[in-house]
Image 1 (cartoon, helix red, strand yellow):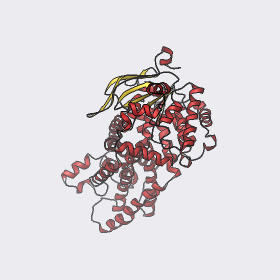
Image 2 (image 1 turned 90 degrees about the vertical axis):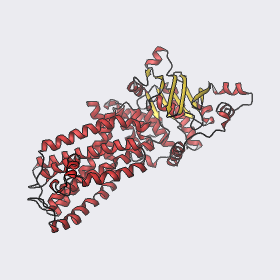
Image 3 (image 1 turned 90 degrees about the horizontal axis):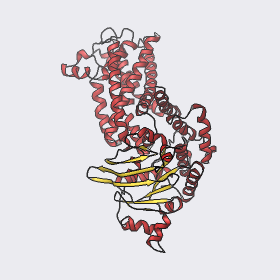
Image 4 (image 1 turned 180 degrees about the horizontal axis):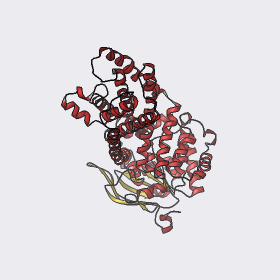
Length: 256
Length: 272
């Protein structure tokens, strides 16, 4: 276990150093949530077209956009992995005696850093737009845990796709095809009750739905979550473990 | 000292090692024995099977059939033991340009499980050995091509492996940088007694560095021997180029697929 932690930390630490040295990606990724919350959210809130219970639409939307940011910043993680493959970095990592699980988990943790930065950005936007946020530390810790877990899921999913397609061109196409259905077939921007039965069925199988559900309860004052937190976190953890197991098996094929 | 040197077995021993990709046989029943402490060159045109051999011996690619032992351990059944005993410099430039030389080495030190108390000293030693002590805290993207290759050698030797695998280590380097890398490799063998297995299609490199060479052609070993003996066997005036042309299909076959060519060019471009 100590070895697993040491190796995973080494991989994650390297990513963190690079991220702090060149934060351009983080800054550019902050633009999209601003547009969703300040433009789309404000307009839809005035229309009152979507019933969101006790909370206003902007408050309802905010956790959805945080989940979306986590998804969008993590889902293209595979491109970086393909880039590392093209540079020979993957080969060198795989020739080392490090556990394959450490290499993959370290990548997931580093994706979590990006997710946490997105969370800070969304909190700042939410404060600026007067969304009523929960302030108790346990709820905030819960949000951070959900964001880390969500980042881990979608970055590992991305890694699995990268291991299968192996080229940037193919990945770009598949990445676009995957992100939008994941986003729209979830409760990120409208409640599950408004969906037709078939879409609700798809949404129930979408891990993004459970991420949004947990965030909605933990982040927003009076925010309603459909499932118990144990269910949300249980599903997220199970999905992460399954994806991690698949990625550990597939990651070595990148060097073949 | 490793398991194979204690038992008197070769540092690297392959037996009928084969790798197929669909209908293509990239490496075809290769037998090979690399002695302890020698610099052994695997020569061949693009597509001859050098890199596939290298990938199998370094546990990156499972063989289709046959077997190999590296440092006394089976590449298929004991890959983790093999990995602990080898260092590897891929053909592609694998040092991370966004990190300093020291940070690159620190990552390797952690992944190879060097004790925390020894890490800094070992990193300083390796950087000093490769003539990079002054550049240790500079970003690798500011290094020259030769410096990057020396840094990668420092990474590969950091855990004092018994066997070093180098896949085209001087591809794309200018003559001075190439000689600098050759000097460091000779120093490594002299000071640490490492066995070095190197792939190249550069005859000058093979002549300057290798104790013995094997010429691969169409996935099979065409000949093995000392460069001087192979030259003499072909004729009094024969050069290693002649030997290569003789055994590698007259040098007229154009091997190497698009991906291999792109990879070579990418490496050369990164080296500036």
